[in-house]
Image: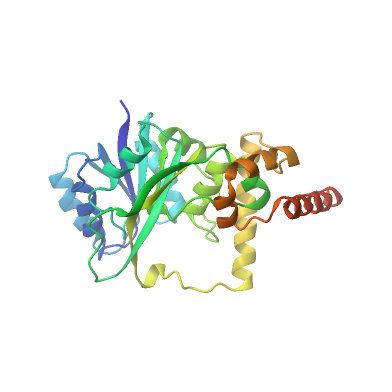
Length: 295
């Protein structure tokens, strides 16, 4: 029997963690287990979580020293069973009460590699969304996107709280060794790694989790050129690490790339800002020549 597990990462979310946990425990289709990994909080988060621990026997808490978000996903490995679906949630976000029910209805399967949905952004202090449904619901199933990602860094996913993945895939992605690399985020790592490893992704359109907008996660933050360069180095380090570990060619062949490019479809080629066939072929050839000269 497949278990549905909610995995929450928390760091100093005393203002939000109660709303977060309330949203998880009032689902119309309950989670089988809820796990919180606390990354060394120094506020009152743990006292609030303790109140929920006394009430819900299927809630588990793992406390650790502060090492950053990557480390929380590494640490969670010790608590995750095989044959489970892992639903990720940041401690400052919420799941509308019908989230799990709608995901299971749309996927129509007990087991999948990687699924992602949309966001419903709401301001801190405003009412959070009461339903996950924000439009016409549909499950779009991708073919493999490994070559697209290894070649063009195609970002096929959404922020952490929008993601769910199998425990099998989770245990291939983690543990990740470069936990001190703060230049890019854990959701980016999972999105890229899932594609590199050949996971078949599902986009659940028309449903959206509650993504809280507050000072610490302001999406309008600007980044310097040095920040961008550091991010690119971190991404390339991650790509190199997964390709080496799983013996996947770092750069795909043209035939492999275009097989995936064709299956992607017009809508997603446009959404991912991929050029037309001949411009894409020209870019791939030029990039390959540069790689050969560098080597």
